[in-house]
Image (cartoon, rainbow, N blue to C red; front, side):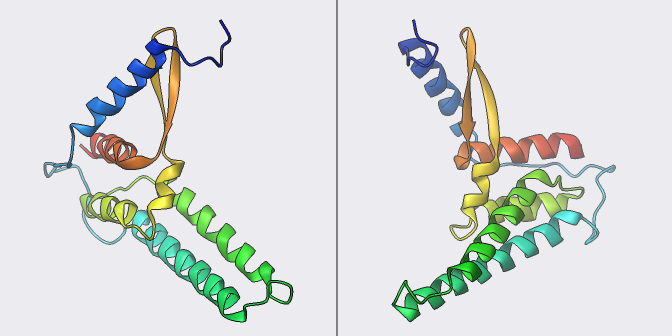
Length: 154
């Protein structure tokens, strides 16, 4: 059997892992005396940077659309704006909130349709039979990431 071959077992295993993750639709975090509160959480700045980078990329894209002629358009500005949006999106996923307020801000940001592409940087390895499956992004990934961060705050 080829290692890249999709088997019924792998499909069922991935399906079960996705189904079990979707059972959780929200995240309740009990207030912990050890969890710091306040604006000093670095996730707030990372979220603001990502939102600004995405808005800038959208603006550059709109400029290209308005120009109409792809031959004379400045694609470089859009390229750099898009790369900044990608880099800051990755930072959103990689930065761990240090406060409950930061955790509360992260979920809505990742679920917002304008910024949802950042969730593609959430990568989970799920055991599956004799191997594993790699699952990226999606609502299940967001829930998993928030639960992981909440456990570290507790």
